[in-house]
Image 1 (cartoon, each protein chain N blue to C red):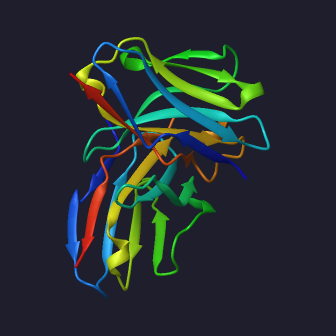
Image 2 (image 1 turned 135 degrees about the horizontal axis):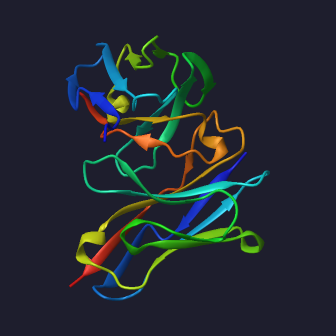
Length: 114
Length: 115
């Protein structure tokens, strides 16, 4: 079984400040890790994913995440927040089987202060 | 580029009624996943299909059923609707199962309100 824990249901940062959204996972097999963003009343849009290889993954909109196996973490960062980054962010994991799709974390609501 | 199409976008039903949600995957995608997202909740996996066969089942109530048709579109049928079924229902499609690191593309969702 696999699970995802996102620390902080709400994160507030000032425009231009560093964004850090935390995600820890548990999986009995090597995981595939994803970050999705959801704007109000919209679907889920993939920001980035880790499958194999380089542990630092770059995604869209200036986001990146680093897979740290020893810490079972996949934290999402962005050097400088924009107002348009305000949204709900979901970390997700799938295993090699994958038939049951993605297991999502509870989500983190990112608030950008002007 | 073509995306995952879900219809209808919004649906209002009364308790004990039935509802059918449709999902049209991206062309050439052979795998469909259904998720339910309650208010303020994370998406919960309901059911998946690969090559028109059910591949896995999650927390889908017995009142719900789904299938994938020969053109790969999928329908989620919901009967004896309850107030608690009010949620955003997402469909996602992929080419191959997600487990290979394949990306899943999500539709805009169908917002079901049961009154």
